[in-house]
Length: 349
Ligand SMILES: NC(=O)c1ccc[n+]([C@@H]2O[C@H](COP(=O)([O-])OP(=O)(O)OC[C@H]3O[C@@H](n4cnc5c(N)ncnc54)[C@H](O)[C@@H]3O)[C@@H](O)[C@H]2O)c1
Ligand SMILES: [Zn+2]
Image (cartoon, rainbow, N blue to C red; front, side):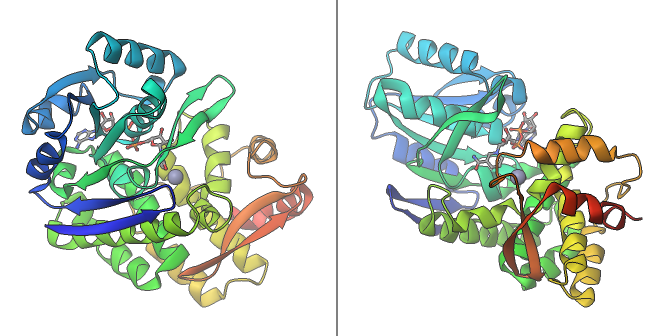
């Protein structure tokens, strides 16, 4: 079994890869007094039977990441008699992972949980690192905890059943790791985009593993997102603004991040941080992901007002994580007026 260790200050755990994870997860779980798999109605019928435990199925979708759902979950767990020595297994995408991780962190003041991420986003990003949480009317991920799982199990073959749009979204985060930390990874993934849509595991599985490795290093250095972990916000400042300006329904998160990365690379070049050569490489690499790279429909006022509400803002300035070359980024703070000045250039076709 291929394993990797995440050394977070609050706890060390392993991420295991490959088709044998199901057996390994069952083995780990057998030491607990009771085990419950929490999944959604898309994922459970496909994969839950690989685990010999009772299953709770929730509605899929972002709406399930709510405080109401947390209340329903902990009631359900109490009704089933889950005690402090019980284990919950989050089997699904980032929604299930964030929700179940959060509920596990507060149920009986914290019980163990493991992640079995089943989307590309969850396998390379949300399943690792212990950020849990739910949304409220006041914001996405407004309520949550840092609470590391007992273990993470990644079987890339489950991506076979993932809708194409979810692959696209995941590729946004994968390419982000490349720009932020690993130029070779960026070049390789952008060359092999189709391996993800056709799910060629010989190509995709090592890429997923490399992303987990990068995330694990960053989490080990900055578990609580006080410094270094910010670099993972590359693409996310414009990305979140596009999501918000689109009323959260036009773009999926990962798509918005891909477009955000493109806009932020252009901004970096305009600020003389990134060479033209690297900008061309980034643009070409990103554009290999099938997505509409069109910005003319964007309403400048809406995007700027969304930027103004970004929770990463510092003293009224907007925080961007911009590439200075492929594989390395830095934080740049800009006033809204400065962003406005560059806007037309940034969104040019
Ligand atoms: N905690 C973190 O560090 C972190 C990082 C990034 C994102 N997130 C959160 O993750 C969430 C998004 O997660 P996501 O992109 O995984 O979306 P998701 O969990 O909503 O899953 C997307 C869809 O795919 C379905 N699905 C999942 N696995 C499948 C499979 N193998 N086959 C077929 N269908 C499958 C789901 O039922 C759902 O309909 C957001 O709420 C975001 O805030 C958290
Ligand atoms: Zn993201």
